[in-house]
Image (cartoon, one colour):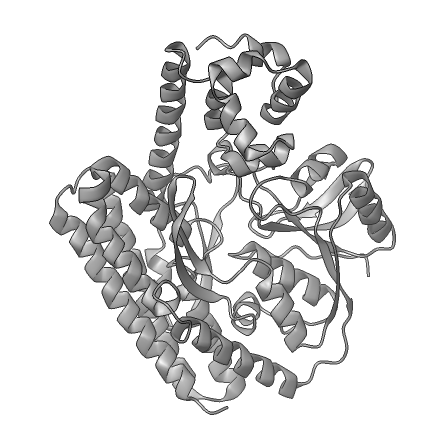
Length: 335
Length: 132
């Protein structure tokens, strides 16, 4: 079980899930399937909280949830561990590697040497796979990279013990037992993943999460120019675009990835309705791309007036309606 | 998004990686395509870095005027907030806030200074004798 195949994916957690499961013989798993079974799509705008001095917005579910849910749906037993002492964490990793076990590690990107400086923020929910060791270098498969890379003991220890929000604390995880997976199990996993995603997008009380959260952001955007001034308001919009489009999203704030999942699900579930809802999700993704273009006009300084901010907000209201329609349709399907 | 419409703009991804985009191929089926970057988000990242530089310059000014200690400058330069700095130093946030004042900073022991210096990946000397 030592041969390892690197898979490049849009998102790191999907990638680790896909690579580790495929390695254990789950050959049907794809990134869209893992994302959909794990109910990966989301929207939340957390008020009164800032990330890098901008709005705290996420287009996907909590870190770790996709791996956890997908493995659970497929009855895959997972071992996970966190550590206080970095040396202990390294000892444990070495032990697993020497047993030929490939493991997922949660890391911070600020000190990740192969990331370009421009991308090195204090973001601690990145995931990679350590699949071996050569001399004193760990062989690393980072799902956002086209090829594999390596890290020294010190470098790996440092990123596994990054500090700040969501500090990884040496978090290490790997499947320990993978049984025979039936077609029925896959179908149930898909159905459950969709139901849970409908709940997350439609049913969370309050105004900040799911399709309502998108409207919440639109209201904020209308007030930003007046409240923050054009420059700061532009930076806030830039932050939205980055959360939505930066490496890891597959484009359009994960909406295209979810549409790809629905397309795959339509075949597996033999349900044409899923294919047509996939088209609606694609439309949502395209609208998110349009809104990113409109927002970029503002932070480039080309668009400066209130009506330009309103145009962004109007697009978000439209997106919210499109996604609401998609998830309402999904919620109606009886699997 | 159609496969043929995937932007291939120059960006910070150069010499690092190309990113996976989920797109529709000619047959209207989902597929993936690699992208070198998209100008709309490249500018967002550039602007975010300009803002970091602006904040770092502002911290320099405050230190010159005697309104802040060097800790503020290095916090901005290393993109740290109080949670991150507190994590790396093991010093409570409210104490860090105090240490941002020049007078409190001057009284710090070498032991505490070393914890800050390590977090910022500089020497105690660089921290102590920082010239804004």
